[in-house]
Image (tube, one colour):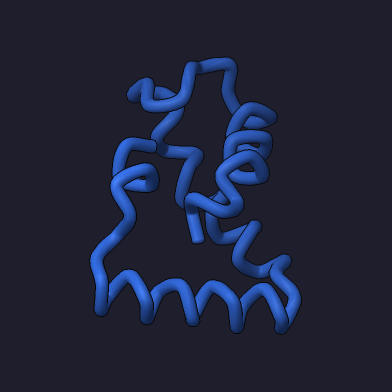
Length: 68
């Protein structure tokens, strides 16, 4: 989920702080941005996220996502 909506999450955090992603001043804004994105998902997007979660739980998270 976070990997597929990363840009939306970063955009919301950027509105709340001028800190760079990963900076200690950036991190407190991340949970609220993630929640806002999750609440805005369509039913289809939620189903896709759940499917991805199941796949990653079975097979592990792809390396390219781990490196994000």
